[in-house]
Image (cartoon, rainbow, N blue to C red; front, side, top):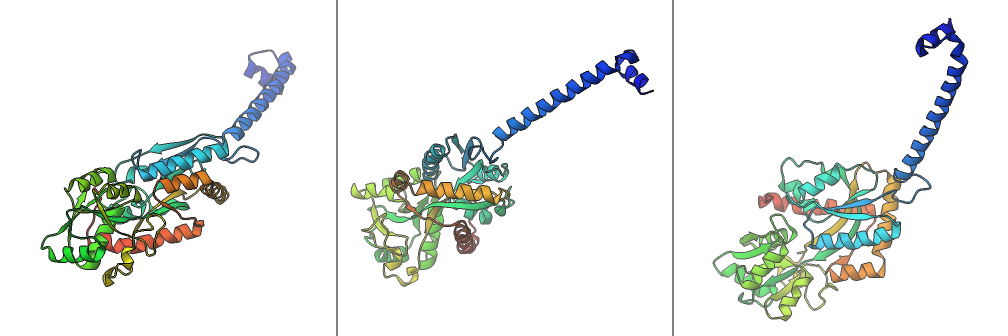
Length: 351
């Protein structure tokens, strides 16, 4: 009966059963070899399989800002050195737009295998308060490694009758018209810093947002606006006599601008605790396995400690800030608690 059934399946006489059985055995052997080859190929392409190079393939650093900016420059310096360390490609993918929402949402949806990282800045903190119905949960990205922070320098145009913070405060309080501050966009660190400064001394400002620091700085130099919180890079305009630098937004003197007095130490009581800074860090999709996060963190920290990476950070006008993962998470939590109420009070919305 079994031979007859096999003959029906093969359209051959029952006597051919032994040949079919042999054929079947060969087919099974071929299938086993194919499965073994497929498993081998998967082991070679799946990230973080024991015995394969970490992280197991090309890695993407998503930057939710345009190319050429500070966050992008730091990401490229980091990516170049990680690629050298891993012996595998690391690509920077600029996903600008939506006030960093587009790139951040892309990273939040990425496969959590350690091969897609988000390199971002202050917008990650601010957007949860400025953008209704974000297309991602804030917790969908976990803090991995801090790269650096940048306390801001308070610049004013030479036409402003102030040579230090106290005289600027007096002018802003008595001029009879709002002082104009440029920024790199609504909700950006320079914008929030200016709003905090004005709120502390009890005055209103005219906020003039630009698409990036460069255009805003150009208009400040040209006298179209009166002030701006910007980075160390703008000190070149001070040397040329085109701007005045009145103070830095760190609580203590900063190595970035050792000749500048902290705004908090200017003698204005309302500004005694004034501080604001941009931060730059790396985040990963929340489901990324902890062993992979640990390895990524260790490699990033090792790269950040390299002398040439320290030089790149210094050239960018920012300060390295080595934090553990829990410390970085606590830092972002404190930033949200500090800036959220101000953003709501001033009704600041994204562009």
